[in-house]
Image 1 (cartoon, helix red, strand yellow):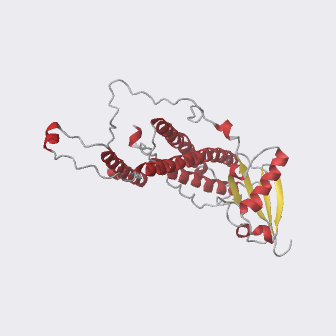
Image 2 (tube, one colour):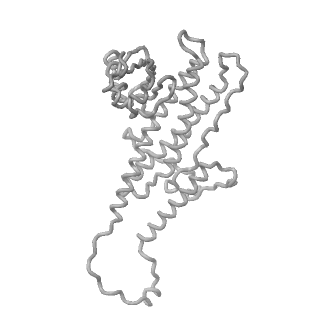
Image 3 (cartoon, one colour):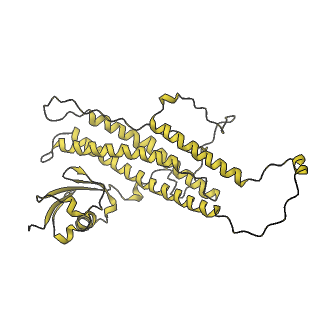
Length: 332
């Protein structure tokens, strides 16, 4: 290997390749110089059709990597051979569809409230100091959004004029020359497009988080199980801890982001109901499936005894993300 070249050993499942990058290839992104060529070779050997977008985990020398647009020369700074471990999806997207998926074409029906229940209000009393920072931030942003939507509704609706007030009102002024159409509909269309794009991004992230939690379960089972030849449990545990912390951070970020997605600007009722069902489904997956699974994995990995005999105390577990408060009030 010449002075201007770098080498990397890439492995996924039982496929392992050594790639030597020239100075020209090192100028490309890590995605184009390493991940794409390996994925093509992997597909030929396995008969699969995975792409770089199907990767759910990439580690370079046991460091979790998320930005594949970095130049390959930055990732491969060392003249020594670098080791990369890749992990693809377990199953195609169509096989990961959950029951009652709102995108499967089935009509979603909201649950019916019991007879006599007050559907329009929510009885929730909590001490202000007991709320987490995320709940306080979400409540503040929700209040601002509701205030903005309420102001828009008041401006759009005609004033309520009684008979007496109408009689005392001055005659209307003469009709003015026609003016250009207001830009409000166009603004609403832009806001609706942005909200739907944000919702679609959250759906993709939630699907990726489900796969990451599944792979983390396999890794923690490997840590808890008997030792495997050539596998250092402390290395696997180190990578699993980093990935688990990243999952918990993304769950928090997605809950806050979904809470800020406003569906008020969507024009038709049918599209608004569909978007509302998709949003509720994402929150349900985050709060009722992904978050509890991540917390359970956190407890399991904290309970794993390291193979060494050191007496250093185990690192304190970071505070798990709190359960999100009820999402947009316009969905009730």
